Image (cartoon, rainbow, N blue to C red; front, side, top):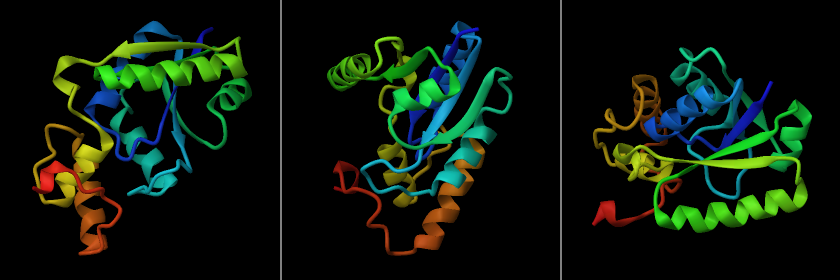
Length: 174
């Protein structure tokens, strides 16, 4: 059995993530969406909520499981006996970052392969930060995220009120 890990913060999970996960599920016996608990960036949702939303978004794919993790991705792969790390590539700039990460992971654990899947053209603009910013500004994210995530975003921004320092400022505010 070949087990693959698709790691990320999934803050929030969006249709680009879902597309990569479902495509990976056709290539591997089991895909674990590994929700990283403490990245070096501000998060909108705590780990438990992100895990819950990913589970809701992917509950119809039987060979996809969702787990939280800490530490190095390759250590998590060893812990759950995964042989592959799955990554998604949207744009050219992703390639350089993912290439360096793949080399670093291979240096740490040569027994774990990294497989990169090219995103569907409809999802090339999607990123968690883009979705967060559009939602923070009251924009329509229904074409970017499943309904459960759209609802969670609305609720979270209602909770935050005017304290939305968690959302980076980009050109969408101009």
